[in-house]
Length: 332
Image (cartoon, rainbow, N blue to C red; front, side):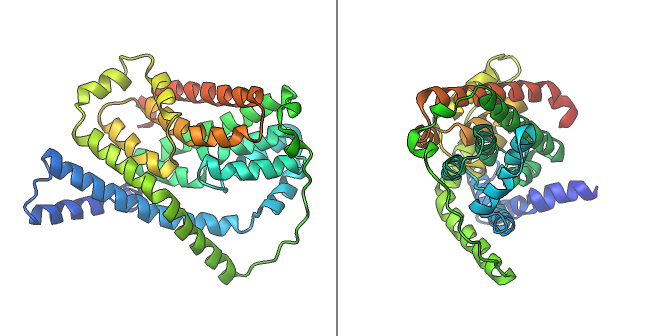
């Protein structure tokens, strides 16, 4: 009962939904109507996500202050083989929230001479399974789904990095990155107040960058939730369509958003009858394989390596999606 309260009232902020519904009813708006329901969904999800975003960014950025790029490079440099890929994937969970933010760090790590498999494990895990995704998924789908999602995301990251390392694709990295050299920059030891200031600056900066995608995502979610007939969603993404996971993965690739923008869409799709694996495959594809981030990555790697990276991620996402469809009855 305590955990249900934490999930529903603290993480899910259901009290906020009830409050907004009551306030809208006082204005004479029928929240059971399509328009009223859309307004309630939009206000509730926007406020909830931005509040969670602020708290999460503050906490995670404070943790990140202990892992500047140079220190992260030194940590990764101490490990080799599979262990290094695992550390790279885990380090990705406390770094930027979207793939476009992760790519500059990937380039820096690769230029510093870290094994290619390690840097790709980092690149896959950073947008897919950051700590923010764990908390947000818990608020929507429950702790079982969140934990399994993160574990399987880390498996994709480690397996993908290991495979790329085994294929010996170092020559598929652009020459200006292969020939780059890292410069050791002394890291100033920050005090508590400095770290808190850094974390707050990250909150403001991230909020400015992601709020348009949050608004777009919530808007799409509101439309799906209140205007798209349930039978349409079930037909396209429900259990009777064996290609639902593949469709969701393909649809997610051209989009650009982070976990905060995809959550309201996923929430609405699930409420309409889409299978869990389909919804999570969509989220993974958007956050990991968005078209803008692939354009950025192309500047760092050659087409062959880019294609292998996309194929590994896409196959991993599809496998995870179908796995979630199978285990959905036991974890929800």
